[in-house]
Amino acid sequence: MAHLLRRSALAALILALPPTAPVLSMALLNATAAEAFAPAGSPLAWSDPDQLAAAWDKDARRLLAQAPRRLDVLPPYLDWCLTHGRTARLAAMLALAGQIDP
Image (cartoon, rainbow, N blue to C red; front, side):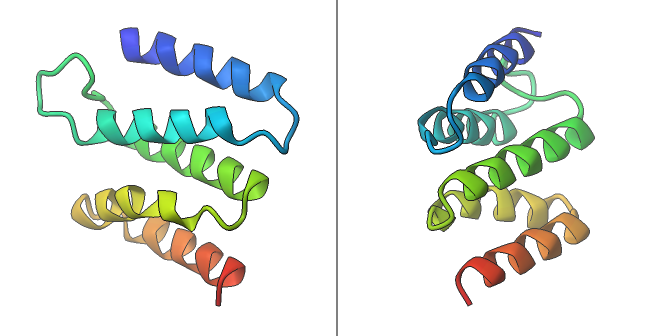
């Protein structure tokens, strides 16, 4: 529950920023990566992988819209998608990355 409150607070700050300010989007992606790879039972661990996947995908797309060359933020998400069988999300994000940097 605490991670949802932190995420909500960060998301509210991000929405208040101009679209050219990717700093908080980066922070949110880094926090999501820490949550995604936290050991089971950790207070950081997400209990719903579908919710995590949807939020992470949305956050990654937001950052890439703000800073298209920040493809360096994608490997943790892509790795998580691969190791958790999220092949449709993996393919979609790779396609987006390919459009940004062929």
